[in-house]
Image 1: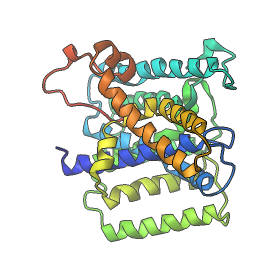
Image 2 (image 1 turned 135 degrees about the vertical axis):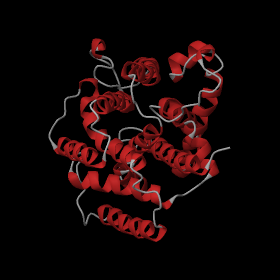
Image 3 (image 1 turned 90 degrees about the vertical axis):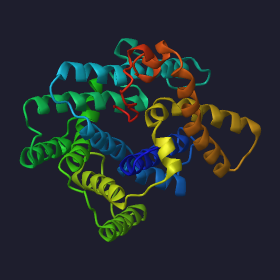
Image 4 (image 1 turned 90 degrees about the horizontal axis):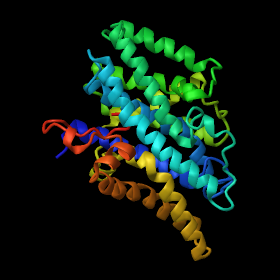
Length: 339
């Protein structure tokens, strides 16, 4: 039974999963996914870029604050490497091999020796998140996150780096720069109790204002800001804080959110497969293909995790979890991406 705090966080995890899966069903651009060039789906997909990955990262920061790195930095990073990097390498490599050897696929690998050194598809997030944890562990060791003043200074520095033209692709360093402010925001809000008693009416006002911003962006009255600009950062953090302040609780979304990491790892296999099968069935409406692919992308990974976690080697290689024999009876189950 989830407590109230867990229910709220897992609800937002579930929402983040739906946004992510929908993004890959529709496609990052008109050349993939449903191959939609314009219209409602394309516009929403592009607009929600301001929220998708920021929300995942913001929630990771909140969950980290529950059990931060305090003393044993090496043990902390070792566990993060197992949880993040091992599944990233295993699942990401399978993803690349399937793309490379699937007949008719245009996604080929030219420099195999750079595999994962240059991140693979959406798995860049996992690699970047690990770098965030390395930074956080260092900052904790130097006691730079022990008070609001030093935390604010670190956040300000991360915002400056966020807006700088740092796009070094190796080991997803550019992604690390992109994610860090959102992680720090979530961590700080939880650690320093900045939203212990949020006013619902203020959250609704903020939601209304954000909705207005998105409408103006969608209508082209406001320009679509680049990914690493100050307006993008402010919109992303504002959206995350507003969603948290609203305190929405949904049992269905929370049940999805519990499996957020597996959904992130495996959803593309199920969305691609379902889309291929549905396209072969006949000329189904786009709405039908979208809904069925979305459901497959959410439920497929959940069922797959339930199968994989039965075997110790699968738990480690595909889920980043400890083998069952290594788990202490009192150890909690960490399910957030990166936790």
